[in-house]
Length: 63
Image 1 (cartoon, rainbow, N blue to C red):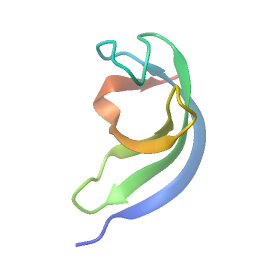
Image 2: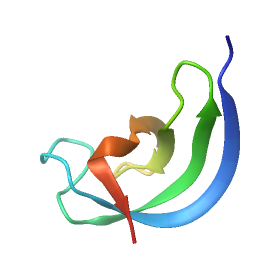
Image 3: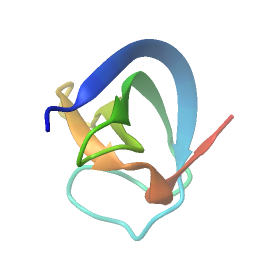
């Protein structure tokens, strides 16, 4: 089964543990969501390197 994505544009706050790509409590931009398929619920986030990549939405909250 293939993932179906939807383009979005909203701000999110990283609430997970600090890592190389994100700082805790820093605001980032979500540019897409996976709405069906094996990765349903994952989001596309522009990280600290300016790259959008798929991440689990569990470590973010919408602001």
